[in-house]
Length: 347
Image 1: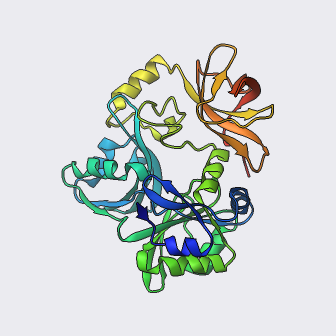
Image 2 (image 1 turned 180 degrees about the vertical axis):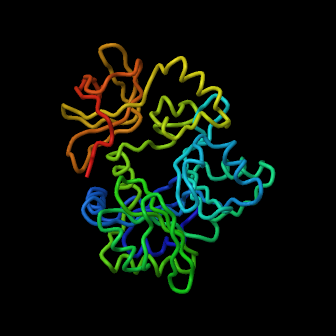
Image 3 (image 1 turned 120 degrees about the vertical axis):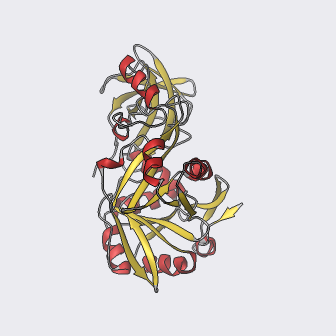
């Protein structure tokens, strides 16, 4: 099983570990709820070294990005980041990912952990692409929360703007950053060489940043209404069904475009929606849901530590209206809930 270069640091701080896609990663330290609330109130730090990342360059880089990804890089410019997806021919989501457009001819592609090899292989097959796998030589951490920017500036002397890339120096080594994350909070992600990673994380913790595990990362992303690949989206779901049409640019040719154009013209028959529980109960993945005209199943659900009630995402057919009543089957009970537009938590 893979281990982060920060594994010993996590162990010193009392981390509980879990197998996450073949990586032994911290799931929590003290408690998931305490770590969740630390991110919402101040700042938290997550080791996300398991996530995919590779450098993409060469004469074929831009054509490959245009052909393989659903979004259009022409919408942004060097120094910015973009959320996008790689699809199959049927429009299903092979992976959702982030592109860091670092300079005119250098891109970083950041897939989900489970899809790193597959996405990197797809780009390797494109002509003129030069690829460097960054996982073996780097550590990635995410610094998130209302006090995250101040922590960036105290330790690194700079902070990335929202959805922008930035560089800094730490202990004589280059640090790459981007104003991205998976919690709904300000902050960013930091990539640094493995030799300096322990020193950097220690410096951030000494400023008062809370170490957080992947358990809190999941409850935070759910409160923010962000889909999880493998649970809420996968190769059987399309961006239109998942409400991710903003990351699709049908005015350029890409793998899966024809299928999406057909689906858009005919209309979707199901949609991923958010709901808030009105009755007591914890919605979980796989629980059935029922509306006046149809139904479906929960893909993500939990108790919101901030709202103190159950929230979730579910595919429902036919697509319901905002404010429509829904029932969630929890064990043998049908518990009332209401369709809402995520995010569930708004600062």
